[in-house]
Image (cartoon, rainbow, N blue to C red; front, side, top):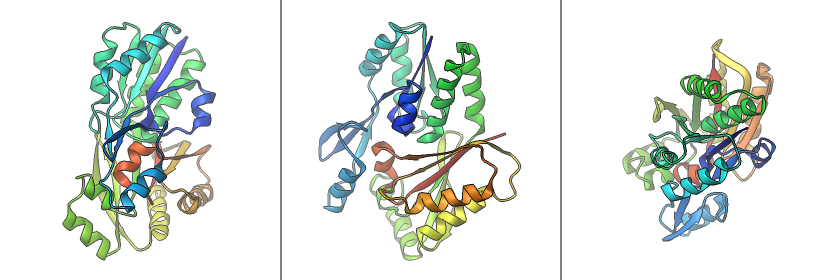
Length: 279
């Protein structure tokens, strides 16, 4: 039997994690000088309240080598092999730490997703489905390598203050975007983030324009599955994107998720992403 493990940055909904027996190890979240565990003892609303009260932006900590060793030791004792899928090494040193930890365990295989949020969550889900179907380790690893090159992860931001405070967006850029009501579209490309477009208007209008742009004139999309992820406490943005995906009518399955605290630390409230594979 093969066990699939991954980082909390995968942002997979709890029901999918439980259904497919995926083990998720949490990253650390530092808020007000205290260390918390993503998805365990801190919520997005805790971060919002802290920042709005004038607190410094929360930061994320990679999973350390010792915690990965504990995970791999526990799962190796119960399974024939373990495949661990990390957040992209361009965003965190989790992959490097997991690789070092795995050196002690010959049947543990560590995969750099080159991605973040459900961009690497989709890979963990596909790996778990393949393991359930009885696929061997070599076949699952080859599938994941193929998926890495075909993954299309992008998102639009309502606010830039979280990225500015986190050092990922200059104060001048943030001020200019806020005054002009510009909302950047960010793509994950070659394991890094890049602003590929800027939209103008309310975030609700922007989400509609963004989803339509992502789908228009495309014949290179693998339409078996699409994933929406957002950082809202309500359904206001997801409902717009969901309706457009349903009207498009091509996707066999539309999954949805709420981003965890690690992703939220860097993009803040009012962010929505659309993730799917290219053919």
